[in-house]
Each structure stands twice: as C-alpha cells, then as structure tokens.
Image 1 (tube, rainbow, N blue to C red):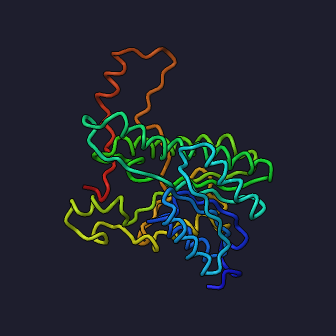
Image 2 (cartoon, helix red, strand yellow; image 1 turned 30 degrees about the vertical axis):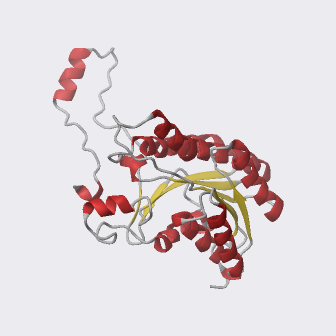
Image 3 (tube, one colour; image 1 turned 30 degrees about the horizontal axis):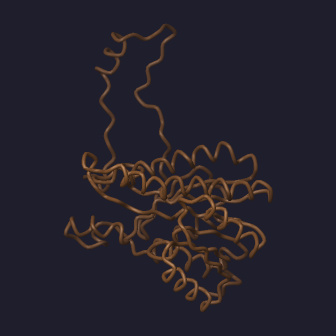
Length: 286
C-alpha cells in the first residue's frame, strides 16, 4: 500500500510494547497505513529489529527502550513523538507482561510486577500523553485490554486486575479528557500470541478453532479504531479477532428496586427472591 494514501496518513503514534508479538504487528500495520510511530520495548535487540523493519518499509519511526512501569520512560515516549513528529495524535497502551499462577499460590512479587507494567504503565503514559494532547487541542488514547479484564481468567488474578483497571482508567479518562477534545477507547484483541498459546495448548485445539486470529489479522482492528473512520467512538471497547468483532457494553443496572422509603433486609429478601442472579459471561458460551 502507498503510505501516502493510508488510513492513518499524518497520524503521530506511540505504541508501547511494540518490539514483539502483537505490538510489533500493530506498529507494522499502522506504519503501512501512513502513521509515524514511536515504538517501545525492554529488549534492545528485538526493538532494533522492529525499527529496522519499519525503516526498510519506508516508515518514520523512533525507538525508545525501557519499561513503562517507569515514569521517565513514559515521559520519554511522548517527548520522542513530539520532538520527532511535532505532536502526538494516538497513544496505544499495549505493553503487558504475565506472571500466571492461581490466586492462592500467587506471590506478592508476581502480583506487583504485573500491576506495575500492565496498569501503572498505562496510567503513566495516559497522563503524559494527555497533558500534551490537552495543549495541542485533542488526541486519542487506546487501552489494549483482554478477556481477563472483562470476564476473568483462571490463573490470572494479577493480569485480570490490571486489565480491568485499564477499563476503569479508560472510563474515567473519558469523563475528564473529552472537554479537551481527547477521545479514549479500548480494544480487546483476540489474537494468537505468546500469551494466549498456553491456553490454546491446554484446550488441545488450533488457534483458529478457538476463535483466535493471527496478529497481522487482528492489527486491522487497531488500524480502524485509530483512524478517523472511528471518530464517533469514545468510551467504547472493541473486540476483534480478525473474524469476529463487537462493542462491549459498559456496566448497567439490572434487577432494580427503588423505594421512597429506606429499604431494609426484608425488602431486599423479597425483591431478590424473585430475581435470578445475573449469568456470568463465558467465552464461546461454555
């Protein structure tokens, strides 16, 4: 594709965690559509390889090595985008790690490490990008969440808490930042990656049979969400596998009882005796 005719032509983007896996494909896809990109990762060799790949394709790219758990790194990412490209239009909070273990066996360190990268990092990057976007008159912040954050996942209490926290961060950012012309959305990429491979192995099925798309296919969802074609989206969560997509509803009230008089235990008991507990969402309906 001619980058000059791309859907993201002129967009200046920061994509965290883009030295490997899905983040790499996000960066390649966005650059192919005309975006100038700041890429990021902690593995210097992997980061340099992606940078070289992007340059060979004719993309405008800057690499910033470091962990988004560190405030200085997040500031450097935004500054690199402003210094090299003149501003920042889109921030994609994609960086993430896993330290899987069942809840009762998980250590303090395993919980804290994941929260530092997967939740503190998005907060820090959102804050730094938001400050610049406010001054320049607008922008777009995309949080990359997951099934764990929306519906939970066995063995991922730390990761699920962080990804659910990203959703709360997104909803709050919508309320605080829309007055500055800053939109905030989320994406759940249903992709075959290093993180999802253990789940696929346990199921004994292929990635496609379980509904996972390959990273280069799933990257199309991010391209669309980051483009002006999705300008109506604010406070939305898009799931995309390359084969299936949906928007996820934010929490809503159900089984409501309201009274002009204070409700006591007896009233609660009578009301909920007639109300079925809400079902838990399960992927694939299983």
